[in-house]
Amino acid sequence: MAKGNHVLNTSQVVNIEDLRRLAQRRLPRSVFDYLDGGAEAELTLAENCRAFRDVIFRPRGAVAVGDCSLKTCVLGHELSFPAMLAPVGYSRLMHPGGEVAAARAAGLAGTGYILSTISGHKLEDVRAASQGPVWYQLYLLGGREAAEGALDRARRAGFSALVITVDTAVAGMRERDPRNGMKELLGTSLFAKIPYVPNILTHPRWLTSFLLDGGVPKLQNVILPGQGPLELIDVAAALARAAVTWEDLRWIRQQWPGPIVVKGLLRGDDAKRAADEGAAAVVVSNHGGRQLDSVSASLRALPEVVAAVNGQVEILMDGGIRRGSDIVKAICLGARAVLIGRAYAYGLAAAGQAGVDRALEILRCDVERTLRLLGCASVAGLDRSYLETPRASVLD
Image 1 (cartoon, helix red, strand yellow):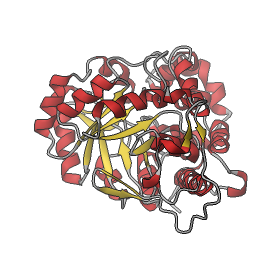
Image 2 (tube, one colour):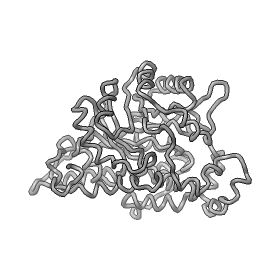
Image 3 (tube, one colour):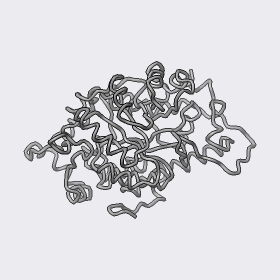
Image 4 (cartoon, helix red, strand yellow):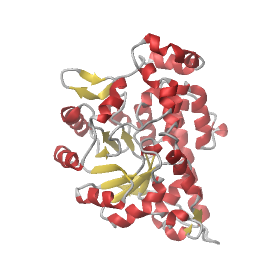
């Protein structure tokens, strides 16, 4: 077990919500709410999860499933089951192992990991930690020159795909963060931190590991020319200057020789344009309900995107996935695989790599059990026939 991990009582952790409760217990309110919260009234955050409840299964009876194949192929990589770990910013604040621990867990589980630009560990260390595919998610923080440096490092380190997030023209208004003093806690003013210190002191396990890890990490993969790594506190301001346009996508294609994935699309016409601009895959995503509130749940947007691209590119989806049955529903509606974010980040926050291991184990077992109960022998065999149309408003 990796250094800094904790022993989990797996009999007490039977679903992702159990990991969420453990994370809430271990983290100070500011860090937990950063992970757990969404934008504004958190309508989309809630709807992402609720949309799955509208999709009802239609199992085939009297089917004995022998060998059950959960494997799928994404951008040429065979995955042990149809879920990859999504990019999660500030992971090192949740646990010192951060991105390295998550990438290692993904590799051991036979799946892939996507590293966020907003990461505290060097991308070379993250790539070295995993025996599976690792992709790099790019924000244009620090401008094109800083991005060129990161892309060159990622290429040399062996990252196999590049993910471009296009729904962050500015940072969403996540109202929990200012209430909890997230900006003040990441800043340098000791006086500004005072109102928030009492809550932090009630979480000594987290505080000890945070201080032993050196405190607030810099962004080791955003190197500003002549200045060094970007300070973590500067992210919100930097995002406002880093919106990605279709013109930027063409420039990125010239800088990156491998496949490009466009993440953050909810419309069929945008997905079709991404395909026409040379993307190898798109991610149907509303950023986990963390950007523009009152947009469609990702699952509801999925069928439109599937129809629009018509097999031209691979389609992934994220948002609201907490159970293996959610993954199966997304596959039935046309996704090649899903990206999970909070589902594994709760595990990371609760217990480091051991928590991510458990999250992946739970979801993988859920997927297999769901397939067997549906009477379907493989992920490749899933389609809309396993969903009950009349009650499944997502299918309308």
